[in-house]
Amino acid sequence: MAKNDNVLGVIKIGIGASGDGIMGASLTDFTDIELNSVNFAGAESNEETIPTESEDSYLTIGTAANPTTITFRLFGVTGTAAVLLLGGEFSGSEYKAPESVPDNYLSIRLTSRTIGGFYHEIEMPYARISARHEGSITKSGLLAVEVTATANTPVSALAVKGAPYTIRKVAV
Image (cartoon, rainbow, N blue to C red; front, side):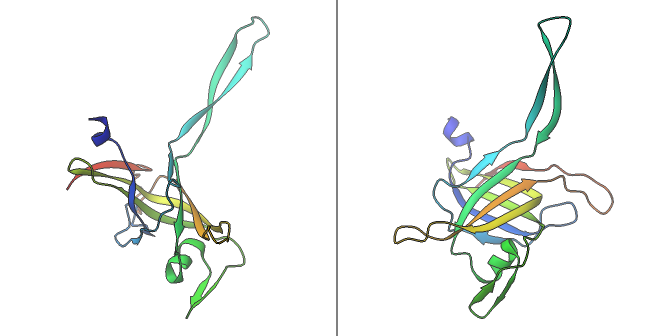
């Protein structure tokens, strides 16, 4: 039954303003997700190996960890959704890119396919969103928005810390 207990496929990715140390209440759903583009990478501890003078052995110490990230590619991102992810302006049918890449801190919720009566949600209440237009513009390729969401520890106005991310199994 391992298949039922895993996150399999992505139905939608919701992104929106963060709450006060919690997930945002109003998320914009993105459903045009490029096949095989979603990657979840949990935090990884880095270590440094220090050789010693007196012996051939060495010491290994932990250093800073790489943060948890989710990367994915979205098709058909236009209008206010483009401004949410990329910054800039949208008016009528024209998107204007910002002069510099903005620091966006938003909530993100990835929702998996339903399997065996359950689906999974991966939530990052306070993630740094780095997005850019990327792709080969050809007759068989589409322009996409490539997004990297980096989990940060959410902190409320009352200094209450939350988890950087949560994986939840939900009954249908």
